[in-house]
Image 1: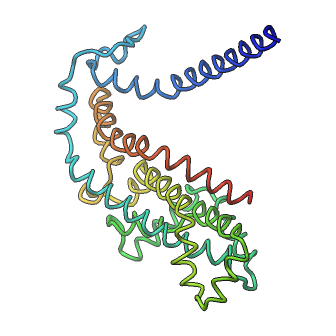
Image 2 (image 1 turned 90 degrees about the vertical axis):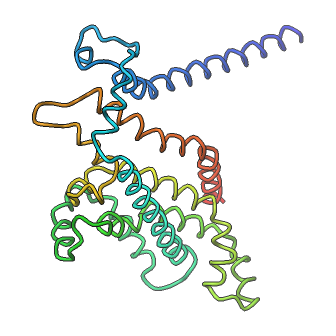
Length: 283
């Protein structure tokens, strides 16, 4: 019995070691690109192209000061926070209403409407750039905040997630609210929405990070730094004479740190929200 217990304990520790080693290797693979950006930001322009490459950071901290003065980063930060925050607010409202309607309410053509919404995922975003540009031009929304917020105010992912969440609510809960005289809007506001908080947090973080990292859409739809986000501001380092890689890397570091901090602080809520949503779907 002692030998069996010792053997089982050894196998358990061996599995933990292998799992830990695998997690460490995966972490290194995902963390290396950011580490390489930090290394490049602290080296000179000549060392960027040397071979074999230098994997240790240098001491050229002046790249950060140079990068900071290359563009109005405070304005870019404020624009990005405004655009991302407004987009998240709109997405949460539209996802909540559409998800509740498709998951709880019964009406003719509900499944067809849900299928049409999901079919949007099959259309590549690049295909719609020219038609979208023409529409925004006709609306006089080019080079405005509206062009970066309103078109992204609804999320198929958010609608799908909340539709699945609300569809898994116990019918008895809905019937009890109806017997108490609560309207569907009151039920959504007082019962359904609070229950869906984990899913809403997941959607909000997902949309916020996606909006913060957006580049192609604002790059095409805007031309003025007064309304452009951070990712477009990074294009300042691309010029006709080449790319300032150390300056660009330094700018990437101090523009990426805020979103990394937000992700790390909200990681537990994100995982808990995804787990709760998955549990609701299975239930």
